[in-house]
Image (cartoon, rainbow, N blue to C red):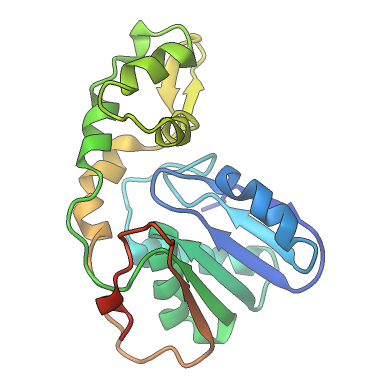
Length: 215
């Protein structure tokens, strides 16, 4: 699979993997900052952003995508940073390919299983009849009925694009993501430990990483 990516700066490679319903675009500001010290490669994972769609969707498959991506672009190893879903993908990749990871950075996710966290968002997205809207502002107003946080709505609206007929459509593969959502919440089960440096970053107001997750 040929994954879409943004590239910034020069130096030792830092590969960034975005979270659920996100894309490499979410990391533009930080990528440019990190590019002062690294060659930053921010990737769109399959079924997200501008990368291809596929019926096959799991952490193991996305980790294989990253391995192929690194081979395609001559990256024998890299620093690997993943947020949320991208964090679990990064953990899976590091466990399977420890020789290809210099250091691992996991943002706002733990290796444990999670319950359903996005039901309201999925319901809101499926509740939109995109053909009925002429502007993103109208879609934002419709989403506000169930998603009060403007920042969350703007994050979701970034997944909109227009088809050849000029109507709105989802850039993400929404059905496949939804149908595999339970699998994305599973525990990352290592057969062997990852022994290289690993940094876990918790958002100060986040509930995704708890004190009990530390051990």
